[in-house]
Length: 202
Image (tube, rainbow, N blue to C red):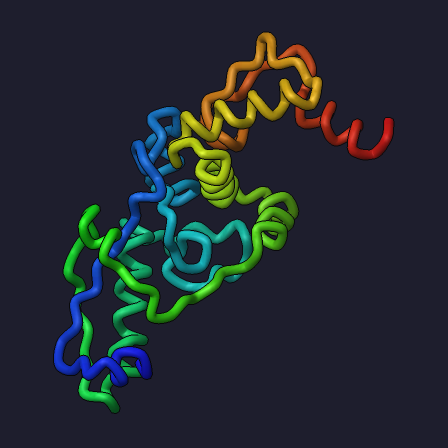
């Protein structure tokens, strides 16, 4: 708020969401309609609260509080917090829709909010077998590798990484980034187990 106040900004400020980091469908066509309807899996977005829940889940298996759109749910929560913080400075905030390329080029950082580190998220994903978080981390890894933030690019990165590490992918059929969501990937030998064994020196 101080940044806006010092710039002389008053009144209603538009807030636009830039969700362009991820591309492709938010819901993979490989996922069953039953899993999506039950909340076992949900549309994957680059910004979300509570790991794509509307509130902190009581336990990692909680699926009853999935938003229709996790990114828009996060924006709504963000606006509520901004309104509360900005009222003392005569500021209010409104959802102005999606950001376009011109918005991204002209944007300036006024503040930042950081999530848990990649390592912390990865540990949580592995400990809790979190399907949605696996999809998010896979897309982020693809972007970090210079690829687009799609499920297809993330799957390609997984295969490239396994091959680079000397783990064969011949016969591997991979529909998503976590075996519990799409049809079971088939491989004559589990590459994940192979890699884990290598990591433990066996």
